Length: 110
Image (tube, rainbow, N blue to C red; front, side, top):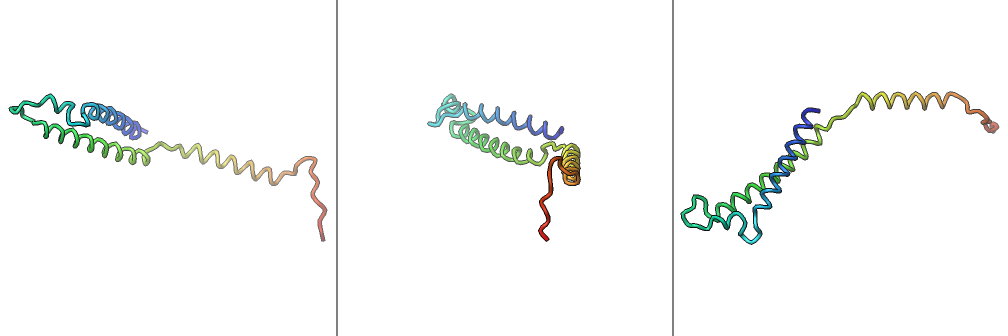
């Protein structure tokens, strides 16, 4: 159960980061990269867009992987299911062995 909660929280954090990274980008090359138009900047416009694109892809891949991993760590309460199955089988067995009131068996065709 703890692993499932941890992965769920990581998925939520990645979703929020992915939303923020996508909102920073501009489809026409503007966005955050347009603020770094000066030629003396440490990161140029091209490097900023490369960084944002790589971050977007990395977060998307991490989200996909964590979503697939979460399938394997979903808590399953097998004890309750096994008890329910046993009780259901007992009820079926009891109903087959006890005659139904008011029911008459068809005459045998010998």
